Structures are given as C-alpha cells and as structure tokens.
Image 1 (tube, rainbow, N blue to C red):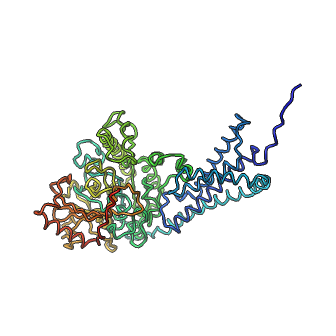
Image 2: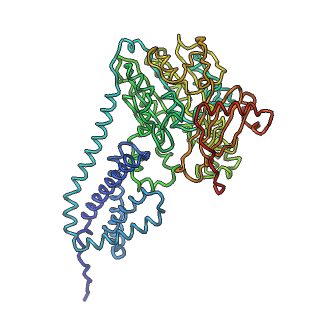
Image 3: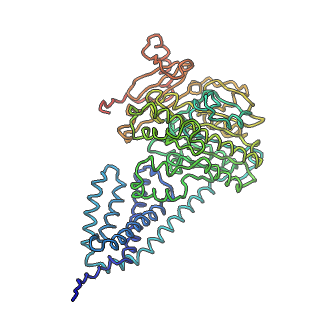
Length: 612
C-alpha cells in the first residue's frame, strides 16, 4: 500500500502566472522609481546623469526585462529542485527593487545595499503573506497603467526633442543661399604628435594627408583644456573655460551664443553627431542651436545600462565603454543618412565627434595588428583606468601606444571614406572642412597617462587642418602657435558672415595679411584645467585648478597649490627642463605670471593633502 504526502497549495503569488505578473509589475515600478530619482538628481540637484533622454522609457523596460529573467530563473529552479527552493517571489522582487534603487546612492557599499535589500524583501513577504490575492488584483490592474505611463513618457521626450530642433532652425535668407557648407570634425583625444601628417614616423594618417593637402595646416595648435567638455565649449563659443560654466559636473549654460546658434540663425541646416556620449551629449549643453543632434544610440547595451541594476551587472566602467562605443563607421553612416535627407535649399553646418582613439583603445580588424602583434592585447589589461600609472610596465606602455596608433589609422581610413562620399555627392568643393581635436593624450611622458590630468603638451597639442578652395590657401603651413579659442570666429569668417562676431580672431589673418591685434588677451595662449572637490580622491589633479600661458616663446604652468613650472616652448618640446628655479629666467617667469593674472583671476594656493 503506497502513501503520498500532499503538498500544500501554493499561495496565489507563487503560481507561475503570478510570478510573471509580479516580475513585470516590480520591474516597471522599479524603473519608474529610477526615472523619478533621475529627475531629482537632474533638476533639483543639478547633477549630470550621463544617460540618454531615452532613459525615461529605457530604464523601466530594462528593469522589467531583468526582473522577468529573475522570475523565469526562479520558476526554472522550482521545476528542477521543487523541494529546495523556498524563496517567495515577493521576497525576490522586493529585494531586487530595493537593491536597484540603493545602487543610485554611490557612497553606500554594495554589501550593505544587499543586506538592506534582503531585509526589506523579507518584510515585504510578511506584509503580503495573507493578502496575496489582493496583491495580485492590484498588480493586474496597475501594470497596464504603468506600461502606458512609460510609453507616454518616451513619446513625450521624443516630441520635446523634435520641437526643440524645429525652434533651432532659422529661416532661409538670401545670404545663406550663397554661403558655403561647413563641416567641423573633432577627433576626440587625438594629439598632433601621433599624426603622420605632423611628422610622426608611423603612417597613421595617409588619408588626411591626401584629402587635406590642398588646404592649410597649423603646425602648433593648443587646446584651451586637456579634456572634452571645456575644450568643446571653447570651440563652440570662442571663450576661455573660466568664462564658461562647462565643468566636471556642470554643463555649458545658455549665457553665451554658440556657433550652431549663430549659423542656424543665418539659415544653415545644422546637425551634430557625437560618439562621446559622456561629455558631448545633449546633457553637456553642446547640442544647443542644432536643429538635429544625435548622441546616444538606441541599442540593447544602451537599454540595459539605463538601469542601475543593468549597469551593476555589466561590471567595470571599462566594460560599459567597450559595449557602448559608437564607431567612426557608425558616425559616417549617421551623417551621410542625414545629408541625403537634409533641406537642400540651404547650406549645412555639420559637427562630427569621433571617439575611436579614446581609451580603451579598440582598433577593429585589420587595423588591430597594423603596428603590433596579437600578443600586445594581453598587456592592455595593465593600463585600464583603475590601474595606477606607477604600476604600468614598459610593455604595457608600448602596447597602449601601438593600439592608439592603430585606432588612429582606422579613424583616418574612415575619414577617407567620408570624404569620398562627400565628393561623390558633389559636396566636397563647396564645403569648408576643418579637422581638429579637443585635446591630446599622454603616455607617460611625465609619468602621466590618458588626459584631463595635467597641462603638459601631449595633452594639449592638437592638429588643425582647414580646407576650402578659393578662400583657404593650398599647401600652406602656419608655424605661429595658435589657440583653438579662435576657431569659432574662423568658422563664422569662412562662412561669409560679416555682421555676427564671436570672441576670438579669425585664423584667416595668417593668409589675408590682416594686422594682428596687439591686445595681450589676444596674443597670449591660455590653457586651463579645472578642479572640483567632488572628483575622486585618487584623481591626479588633487593639487587644485591649473593654469598655463604661452608668451614670448616660454610656457608657464601654475598649479593649484601655487607651484610654478617654466619651459622653453620652442626648444624644449618635451618640457623636460623646468626653468622656474633658475634665477636667470626670473624676469621671464614674472612676465608670464603677470600675463596669466591679467587673463584669469587666480585663486589662492590650495593646501595639498599629503595623504593623497
């Protein structure tokens, strides 16, 4: 005679269909809560989110997917191990909700967040134990409502972006109909020192040399900042970083007109396509004035990283950058698609930002073995951003340079394809083409790596190539050092505008014979690196804000703690011989310091934290 032990009937919330409903409900609710927290951080605390505007719908959808995966995993385990999985769904989803929302609070450790989440999940289970049927009725009624909220939120954001673009488009004028097109290309993180066209021994830029040979090249060009946002802000406004709001945690505000606004007001069709979604996105303020602007792609990785939980599961920032990278070919595809459907009754102003030479250096095949062998990849594990520079091996440094150069070669080839397509469309010869960079990159020249860490020349010296047949001389080399601060005025000048003026002086003075202004603010090249106490304690710029000037053949660097360095700008390119403590150069140092003080207010020296 056989006997069987009857299993207790499952609670309403533990039935398979109920688990799915709960997963969707908790996931959507968590995502909506994340969006509310994003809004508070954005509009109440004025923080960067580093997220797409599509996060309004992406975060709830991503959380819903992740919670659904967790729910299906729970159901699968119950099939495999029916007697060993006592985990109630409410406990699982309540804990996941809590953990996801606690991830948005950076100072809280992940272990502490997990413990708190587990405790709240247990408490939620106790509260709903005798109300499971009522809970399920609430879930079934409100899930469609939350889904509708997410849908409407996504549609609303898209409608707002479209309306903003329409407002940015100016009316076509008689003057604009005869104006040339303008293509401003910024190669993010490209230092002039690594370009074949600038004398680098490796053939990293044969396409630039070929396509831009009938233009003008500037030999020594200095960015106003060694990192993206303030440099781009200068490019767009013609103002120094200290005159602008753009910083580590603050966007470019609308206090100053931008190049896109000026050209759009003249009737230009303006469009921006950026690969650097960290500091060039809509959130940075750089999209102002463009009638069309593309930054974050709509992709599966972008969807998942809109959720705090998805970002956490992805691991390091390096992994996120790797998965979210927008390639040069993708930028080409976007801009050519826009050009094929643009308004043809007006000229265009297009801004392109390529990110392929930014770390982590990931050149695609066949460029990934152009200057290195396949084994070089293993050394790159030693140069991720979380590895102190003092621990880099010589092999790792060489591998970084190889991969950087290979990435540059890929970018150069992609530019060649873009130029060929412009020529095929009949746009090449009536377009002002400007190729430059926002800042350079350092590979240990002063035991400093990457960028945004110092004001040494590898992080500041960038290329500048200008081509426009008939207005810009062919094959000319300008050897006088110049600043990117003058680029906005140059674009307005080359577009034929004689009424609107942006700060700075057009670089056309080097081929038109215009007498340069004698004002000190125009003759002195200024570079800046801002500081914020909110930066990580391990940041290399813990010495406070840095300032630098180039004047009369010498360059002065002033650190936030008051320390000064002085270099012979013409003869000591690598800046190895500091002249600041040589009494012979005291008059030169004093002259440069006075010039710096005349340009920008200098804060009192910041006391160095010796523990850092």
